[in-house]
Amino acid sequence: MDQIIYRVWLSLCPGLGYGAAQELARDFGGAFNVYNADVKELRKYIPGGKTLDYFKKRSLSRAEKIMLLSMQNDITPLTPEMSGYPARLFGTGEEPSVIYAKGNVKLLNNRAAFCVVGARRPSAYGTDVCLGLSRRLAEAGLIIVSGHAEGIDQLSHRGALSARGNSICVLACGMDVDYPRGSVRLREEIIGRGGLVISQFPYGSRGLAAVFYPRNRLMAAISLGACMVEGDGKSGALITTRYAMELGREVWSVPGNITSRMSDGANMLIGEGAHVYRDAGAVIDYFYSRFPGYFPENVDLDAMGDEVAAAVSAAEAGSFDAGNKAVIGNTAVAIGAGAGGVETGAAVSAATKIPLNSAANKKAEGSNSSAPAHPGNTPSPPKPREKKATVLMAAESGGRDELERNIIKALKKGEQSVDELCELLEITAAAMNTKLAIMTVKGVVKEHAGRNYSLK
Image 1 (cartoon, rainbow, N blue to C red):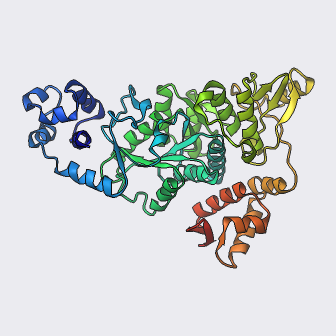
Image 2: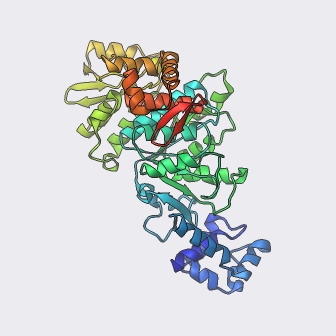
Image 3: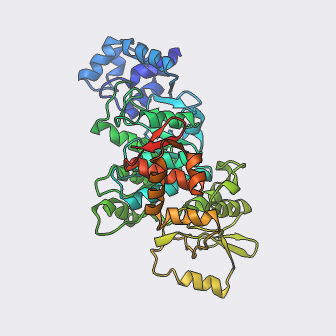
């Protein structure tokens, strides 16, 4: 604890960047020695002005207050000397002197972390894709990493929560600041479900423009890969995804309407080398085939969508062919895509088995020749499931308005739980959670304690 307080003190120094703070701590053998060093020795490391004045004062009062607040609020200050500090940051230049963390700190060193970022005002298309993507990746065992901004950031956390998965929320403010206003409840839900909330900024830090750049780079640095879901040419999501590419991470981007300004950033990223995102299976099979040791062995395939389960089980079996087909023995399991070539949840049915090099296989590949090129991702036509899955497919593709009307009709009778709505409307929990998340964002319904909902 004594050493941590000096790291907190060092992190509060005005005008001292991450690199300079790390260099000081390294060259002087720790932040404690920096604190006690002669100012003359420090001059070659630091500029004058406020930075120099800070070192001359040597006051620990603010650092002590932060340590006290952290203890009172179950927040762990992590420093580069501690085992819980994210190892993936070392060597990136994105090494904050302190990362404040609340929740499951072990997630920071879970190697299967995937960042989802995008527009603050996504379209219905972007909303649907984001919820489906984050839900299915979470089902497969990936940790969803995102910011806490309105729009895609918060939707990605919602998607992970709907799959009972974990997510890491990276704040652009201090841990004590309610930014965006009214979003504290989502943070608490993330922590309560086994997730993590972190910030590299001290208590009291507001969500100002200057903090978004380092926050966005931190998200990329702690992740194995990233995906951008909508955003214009000036979107902060481009900071995250471009930096991820600089670090050698795999990056995907959701293609959008070329006449829409909200697609400019995402389409631009594809031109810069990002993979075209078509379905979650392509992302999962990429990581499972290359990094099998990064994922849990007890993933429940029965709880997943067929597309995700096929990608996972095939990766565990050990091989993939050049298309988006997992190869098991002499059979290629084609990973399907939903309407419009974009993964839409249960519109993807049980994986269709196609013998390798068969006429049917070649025909399936040829039928997609007009689709944007993306190595390792050639979707085949979906095959709808029966009974309740049919209801799910209607809910997640063309029948959204009908499902929304039915939910509104049910909630007119009073507050209802997710389970009650699922039973009443004969729909799966995954589809219901997705729809309720969309309706919450749209302001149609309101969530209450215990995952109960009412009309807003």
